[in-house]
Amino acid sequence: MGLSAQPAIHVARKVSAACATLRANIRAGNLGEPGSKRRVKAESKPIAFRPDAAQPFDDRCLSWQLDRRTVSIWTVAGRGIRFRCSDAQYARLRDHRQGESDLVHRDGKWYLCATCGIPEPELTGPAGFLGVDLGIANIATTDGGGRHCGKYLNRQRHRARHLRARLQAKRTKSAKRLLKKRARKEARFAADVNHRIAKRIVTEAERTGRGIALEDLTGIRARVRLRKPQWVTLHSWAFAQLGHYIAYKAAMAGVAVVYADPAYTSQTCSACGHVSKKNRPDQATFGCTSCGFAEHADVNAARNIAARGAADWAVSHAAGRGTPMAAGHAA
Image 1 (cartoon, helix red, strand yellow):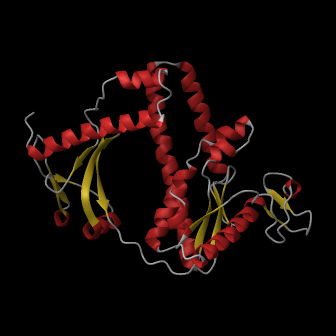
Image 2 (cartoon, helix red, strand yellow; image 1 turned 120 degrees about the horizontal axis):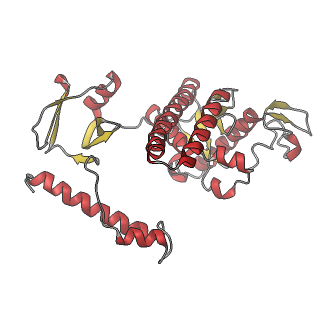
Image 3 (cartoon, rainbow, N blue to C red; image 1 turned 90 degrees about the vertical axis):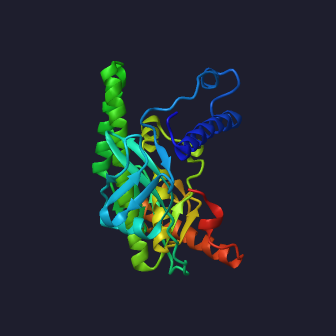
């Protein structure tokens, strides 16, 4: 193949991993039942790789010269390429880089995704928990009243959804190309918003010495009952990605994270505990029919999540099982 030993080994390893992934998906039923159109196509079509597909490089094929901001990488055209990164990324590369790096071609640019092993600070007992309610009108609401990304974000999502519908109706090649471009743009936009929300939440928890209580949304797609417009809105945002960002940023900051059962948190009074559908006459309003307590509905739900997170943390530590973050949930 005209390759030296190490790149040739990587080629064989990548092909083997792709075949193993396909077999695992077939065994797990992810590609449909035996005989289904999707499964037959997957089994009969040979595995192919794009010319610009991501490639792994270990320290035998790639070395970083951080002081000169260059990287020496094995290519068929030689070595020695300059790279750019932020000061924070440079410090992380210098102090924690280890293992393989992936060379990725995305939107006409080349990226090196380096693996960094960052030790997590030791968790200390939090002084309470910051409850976070995830929703449609506001992506995230904290129990202190902080609401992240409301009307402006929903306008952007609504506009993008209608543009997708118009392009899908055209069914032309140029429309399909634009759809792919728009999908990547929307994914980058959602990731950026989720990063900023997660950073604010973790910073607030770290500043106040509290942990973070999140909703355990496992299986939410199967449980939720909504009208069609609400269903589309709910499934057009990456809530799992937001939870993952909060979890890893919290781990780096030494902030505890627990996952609480979200059942009836929007109908439960955070002051007296009374549960009733009548407590929430509309999306934004909460008014307890028992004690008269009134609050924004999302803030009230966030307070209930914080209380449940504190209770779960206490039970977990009393039983000696460690943190619920480590024992009970995988983002």
